[in-house]
Length: 119
Image (cartoon, rainbow, N blue to C red; front, side, top):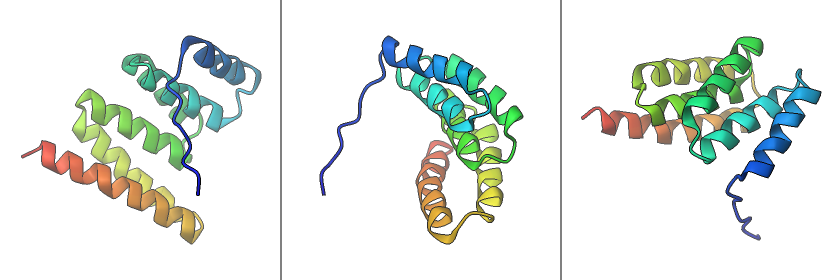
């Protein structure tokens, strides 16, 4: 199995994501990718704004909730992050078993980090 290199987002990539959101405003994944792309460039506050707006527009999208929870955790808003992780767990109940398992496994790692931070 080949390992994919993770590309560090640059301004051109972010601009491509912005255009994708503009041309496909109903595509929740485009919003998520833009938020995470901004997060990857260190634009954490802007990432949070994008993801919060997307979450309001797509309230049942588990991946958006998860992405926003990660950003909030990084910003130190552990209480809101924890609340969102609980929402992710609730939303994940409706996902197919394999996807739900993967989501909950990713979430457990982050939850452990939150608990460790609170010590």
